[in-house]
Image (cartoon, rainbow, N blue to C red):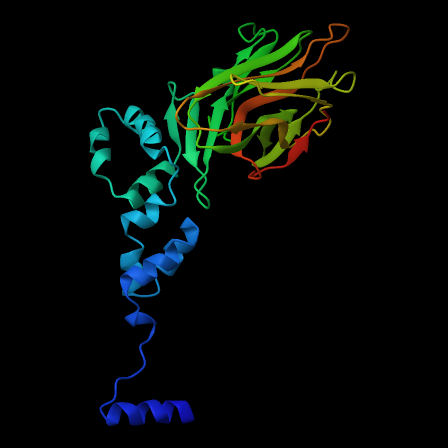
Length: 293
């Protein structure tokens, strides 16, 4: 109460009242925003005019973008060819960040990249159709199963096979940092019954006999090798293949990876192969199984 009366007295006497948050210079507000993650910048922008103006500043958002965001925008131009893609050069940095935070399909829609919204790290997904799967063209072994549980709306479902092997590769200029690579798998066939999700498990067999082997290698000599049993039906799980380090954005790094169980003494089946996911190390959205080295 005393403070309020004192301030009122100061105004009446012609003195300058203490500056409030709304009086904060826009440049100072921008310096504050540089220390926040992207979602927090958007929330703070609602406080007042100074923060709202600072939140639109190019230098604020350029600091949140990956170093090679121009390279990433090239994939946007390819995805939106014929839809005004040539306008990307005049986009504000906030608009660039917002566009790259949405999925950007490439390679005929078989792969996607996007920025993780909080930290701005590059994420990537490779669909089952972008992978080399032994026997995929023989419907006795594999079928393509439509499902809304995949970001690509379709998974490869293994009915039964002796030689199980899935291989993939990607060459890409990742921003410098450490990344983790996962296979997204599901034991059993997901479906719906009376509007409820169910898992059909009658074809699951063979995965308890021997572990699957997961391998990762890079063009600059990095390697990872691990193995694990597939034994959790009914859930989508990320199986960690390994980590790799991208040391520079100047040269692309080529990744080769595989998932295999090639012991032909028994058959195996009842497995959905959805995709391969590449995330900045420490970021994941689903349950992760770490394989044994």
